[in-house]
Length: 303
Image: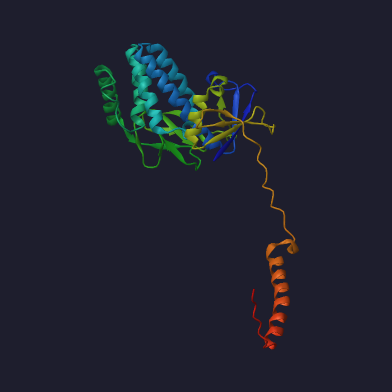
């Protein structure tokens, strides 16, 4: 399977972490998911490395940028990955001494569900803070009241919003093709802003990402493809082919339609001349046999 993608060198108008290359694909949703998954995986790996080197500020600033970039694209992100991002962001904030900010992030992680953080990785004081946030959320939870949904399907923290019990605070909300981090008030009421029809958007590569074979390989693996065709200009028919297994660009011979074998005229086919030959032999042998059968003279040959 080949994923067709296009690069545009026009500068990106969005966040600085998304650089100046726009990736357009035949299946935008699939492309979004693959690119965001690879980007988030890389960001978490770098943040864990920052944490291991006690560079806590670098860790939380990196993850803050990633989380802000993802808020408007939650529908393309695995909830489990989003939870890991918030857990590690909360951890780095907590060990850096930013307790209030850490608790706010831990609240978001709790609302996403799933397993608690690994106590072998998180210090006891951070685990205690997380558990306190979890317990407060449980006690404050009440039935969600949606306002101005406009008939659109609404998902909160990746789950359908119907008959949902939530705690007041920030939640990842998706509705009508949009997604955003919105606040549920103390009455558990959530007001959805009126938005225009969302334009069809495409994910953006940074220049560094586009030049990183390992990163492109991870995107291809997330998309489940063997090759990606990439072009600099959306209008150009020229493209480069990236081989996911090899993690590099490769030269692919232009495909051509197979040339059908030449049709042999019927009179040149072996079986036609076989029949003709058999006919000739029959025409010669049969009369001789008939003639000889009428002659009873026997001949003896001696030397």
